[in-house]
Amino acid sequence: MKLPQVQAYSDPIRFLRACHAVIEQQVMALEGLVQEAKKVGLKQSFASNAEWGELLQFFSIEAAGHEKDEEAGLFPFVLEKEQRVGFLPADSPIRFLVDGHAYLVSKVESLLDVWKQFLNKADPSSEASEHFISIAEEMVKAYREHISTEENLVYKHANDILTPAERMVILERIYQRHDNEVSMPMLNFAQPTFTENLKSVPLDYTDATSSVSISEEPTEEEEEDVPKEE
Image (cartoon, rainbow, N blue to C red):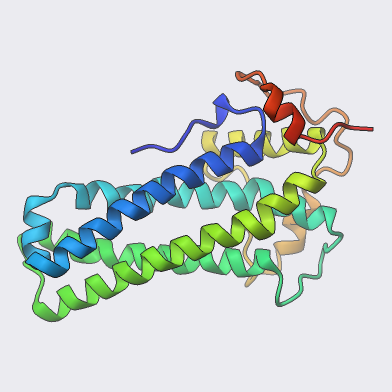
């Protein structure tokens, strides 16, 4: 399973929401496999479902890439618009969400460790199986809560405050990340470079869309959602 291609979208919020829809489908699939594993045992579930590997690969690559898109493209602009450069409240939704990204990555890595051991002919022990199922259940819950928070506290807010020109710059940032994983540092609150990352956000958006290639014409519905520049 792959996430939508950013080049097919003319609005970053619509793109990120489309990614959420796919991630939610995969979370539901993971939940189904976990329920099966609880009934038949993790070893049997692993042996009879190649989907385990496909799902774990999706979360470790596709879903993780989506989180990087948010950190490289959307989050800095929301912070800039809210005039929080150099100061981020401890209860900021974005601080919470970036921490949540790290939490989700750690859960996926724990599941991958057990899966890789199985592929190397090391059957999971009873204790390892229980631990795996517990982590998977935590991950399902965490993803749902995380997506809900992003949709309601960040995406909705961003959709209200971002100008069309700013949206184009966000798309370009995401394009660049897809072309080159190291094109822009991810937000990292543990490092003093955080404010430098925000300073890299252009304050003059007049010519910022010059290199953006749009392959999707906005529908009438999209035009209603995207605020017009005054």
